[in-house]
Image (cartoon, helix red, strand yellow):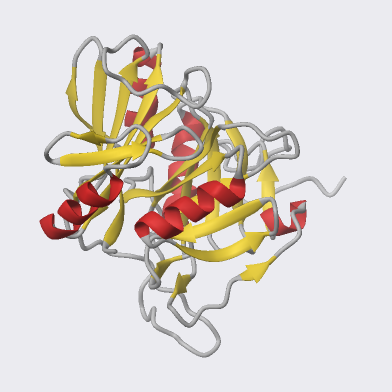
Length: 321
């Protein structure tokens, strides 16, 4: 199955004014708006829609708004879409909208498939000098004043039945398990070769359905930091970050999202192939983050929030007393 990743995410929310400001600060481009709906695009044309909760025809949410109402996955071509049209016809909540087909997953989420509308993009990324490879020569690493997300890279949901929901994505769409928290979580990627995960499913001890976060790819660590500092300067609240995940290796920064749950900037995730063997992990704070800053960094002082800031022009300009 040739699924290329997430093409579009739709949130349901009531405060569209606040959501409009948030996603523009986040670095998305507002491409259309009216009283009931905002549509944003990332750098490669991946769309984020924020619809008013009262908008007619909006699929039901997994939980009260604000939350994600619909996920649209992009497929490679019309032949794949036609195959899915026939394949999904017997699934609960089946819809055929011509350019899109879809159904409801076992967790109650509306999912749709379309021929991908995303554009190929080329961006300049930072080079990293390691002991063995010195690829950045006579060139400083970049610093960013803000982020311009490339696409929605993955989405994470709480599920009521991990086994059933994971099996659905594997059997219907060819998703592959990258890593596992046995009985608690599955990291899934769309294809055997690709980034570490496009979908992460979590079953809590008291199982419930809901959104955990939506994650946006940026080009490198420096854009994670630049984007996070900009959001901090704009007054938005960090949940946790910056930091680094041991599982997936990605560098991250999470913010509280007025359209529901959290959003994440991330970069430098593992690239996997069909030769990768899924690993089992026990959930723990150490498995979530190799390192992380709770509460974030102040965008103006560039120091951890509530930490004393140097007062001199140089950090060495301080009293010996």
